[in-house]
Image (tube, rainbow, N blue to C red; front, side, top):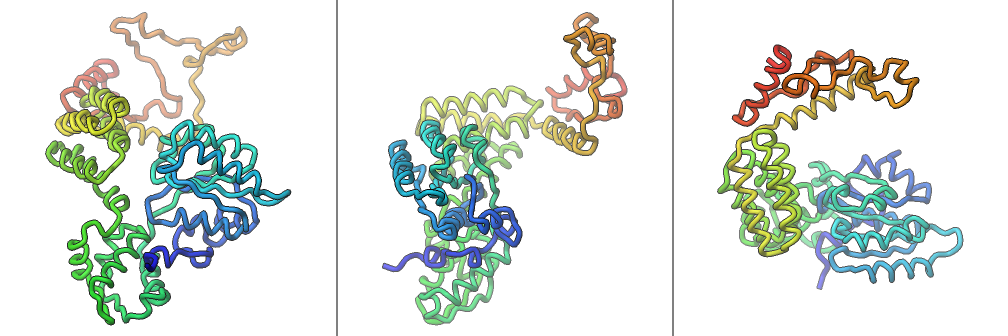
Length: 423
C-alpha cells in the first residue's frame, strides 16, 4: 500500500522545507544554529501541519545524530527513561547529543516532564518538543526554562501554492496524471494553512475523479469533501474555527450557539481542559466587570472537569457556557491592561513617586521615602485624593468604564471619589 501523499512529500532538507522563513530562512536564528552544528533544547509551538515534526527530523539528519521520537499520547515515564538510557549508550565522546523529539508535549503529565529534566540539564539528550497549545499553560516551568521557544506560523498562500505545484510535478503517483489547478480558493480555504491537510485534500480530490486528466475547481473540492466528511484532519482547521465560533457565540450572548459549538468540540474529541481554559479566558476578557462572578464560575467549571473527568464533565462545562453567554458583557479591564502596556512601552520606567515608596531604613526615611503618603483607611469612606501615577503620567486615563448595571456602580463610585477625572 502506497504511503499518503503528505508522507511522500515530506521534506528531507532545509532547501526543500517550505515556510517558517523567520526561523529557517537565510540568517534566521534556527538556521544559524543548525549550520553551526549545535542546537540547544527548544519547543516548537504552532498549529497542526506547519512542519514541526519535519523540522525536527531535518535537524537530526543535518547534524547526523541519533533521533528518538515519543508521542505524549502513547508514551509513559518508562518509555522516556528507556530512550534516555539508549541515548546514553549511543553517544560518543564530543559528539552532538542525540535528539529526543516529543510530539504533543503539552499532553505529557508533570511526572513525565519531570523525568526529562535531568537528561536535558546534563545534555544527555537535546529535547525538541512540539505542541499546538501554549507551552506556558502545559509545560512545567523548570523544563520550559531550559528550552528556547519558537513559534511556527500557519503557511501563507504562496507557501501552499508552491507545495501544491511541487506535489503535482514531483510526486511519483501524481506525475502519472495530468493535473490542472484551475481554481485554488476552496483547497486553500479548507487547508487552513495546514500543509498535511492541503495534500490530503489534493490526494482525495484526484482519487475521487479516477481519471488521467484532473481539472481541480472549487466546486470539485467542495463536492469531494462533502462526500467524505472524515477525509481530512479535524484537529487542524476545525479545531481553530470551532473554538473561534464558540467564543464568539459567548461574546455575542447566544447560549444556543455556544452549546452547539461546544457539542461539536465534544463529538470531535476535543480536550475538555482546552474548552474549560478558553471559557476562563472569555470570562475575564468578554464579561469582566459586568459580572465578576463569571470568572469564579469558569474557574469552578475547570476544577470540576479536572476532578470528575469525562463524560460527566460536559455538564459543568455546559452550565458555564450558558452562564457566560447569558451574562452582561464588558471588556473594560481587557482594554485597560492593553492601554497600560502600551503606555509602559511608550514611556519606559517612570520613577515611583517618593510618597508611594516604602521606607524600611532610616536613610530612606531621611531621603523622603513614604513622606506625605496618606493611609486611605484613616479617612471617611476609606478614600482620600492623592497621586498614585508617576509624575509624568498623573493625568493619563487607562481604564474607561462600560456602563453595564454592575460596572455602572463602579463608575459612579469613581466619580464620587475622583470627580471630573473619571467623567
